[in-house]
Length: 337
Image (cartoon, rainbow, N blue to C red; front, side, top):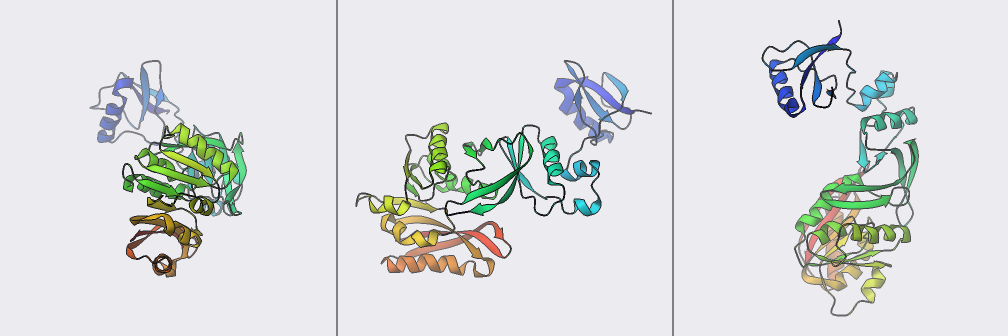
């Protein structure tokens, strides 16, 4: 016997699914699909007794494949192979970014991910980050191979080319936090702006941001993203070394908040402290052996402040994400007098 489905009007689809769930007969292993211009077919395991429907039909429903494991299993993967499949990935606009690890048959992983995410057209394997500008190394696993994309999160839009610039999905909460903690009319310095990771949320929150980025390819996306987000009047962009921008700024220039989103940010603390307003806040990022959290980043900020003749009135070290085995990406939030 073929499987069953019920026909209901499109406006009633959600309510009907809820009612069928209550009856215990909604078959969530199969997909709901359009059946005509004004109705949908909802899969069920038995004819409904309480839920009003137009009719009950017999159909050979295509089972919904919901997980990567389901897709790969359908492609013939063994249990041992499935154990080596990627456990996470990120969808950035039309591009899926995945750490492929030692997974077998990477091309099949890529194709499965495309089938799972219908709006994406390219799957990239992330191979690592190299160079002083933290340039990504990626490999096209499936799709058209277009590495340019536009990604939106928390209302902020980022255009980028993932073959040229780094974008860390794991920093999503940190990007949102910078927009939340930054007040209107604050004067902010983003010393390592990238494509606008932190600059854009802060500018959208009403701050005036001086955004500095040294890489020419990354800087072009920073400028584009400032325009895309409509914050041209709130952001000044500089393609330069942030230490040079600080050294050449007017003596009266002071910032209420300085974001140091680079793993070697501690090497730049002396420059940052020359332009941080008394009572201002530093956000210093670094990759720290987990066993040295919070002591090492806290000590680095306090030592730099002491050398500059200043004091740290408070410092809190937060873990953003894991960086590698035994190493954490942390941020030291410090208020300096």
